Amino acid sequence: MATVNNIEQLRIWFRTCTDIVAKNRFGVNHISEKAVEYAIYSSPSTLNYRENVLGERVLTDIQTENYIFASKENYGADVEQNLSVLGWYQDIITWIIQQNNTGNFPTMENGKVLSILPTLTAYPAEVGSSIAKYQIQIAVRYRINQ
Image 1 (cartoon, rainbow, N blue to C red):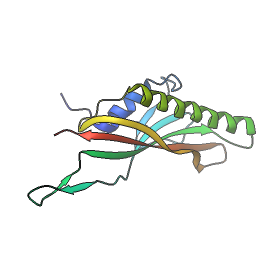
Image 2: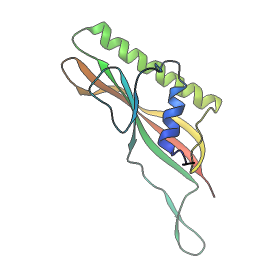
Image 3: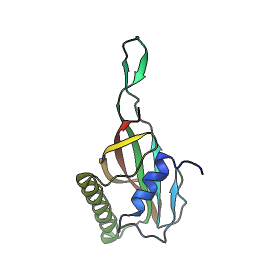
């Protein structure tokens, strides 16, 4: 059986949020042009190193990986509709913080998750005439397996 990688574990974890509609498509590193869909994207993350007693460069025990949670939403001149999307994202952020506070984290293949926290608020990253891609950034901090 294949190992489920970190981004898939995170996608599965997001699916447990009651604000995520189960019937809607939830992609990895891809989202179509249709509303309403979700996606989790990998995002560049800095690797942290230290020097061990032999003078070799090795990864530090604590690392952080960044991800983007995004959705395609209906969008336009309707203020209430746009406010509703931002309110939905605030609910997602609140859920992430609650999961962090209770220690309810996905299992990651390369370490034990220490925290998952939003690092950027919701904003429309791509805007069309009737559909926009909104997104937030999250940081997953973990202790690497030794």
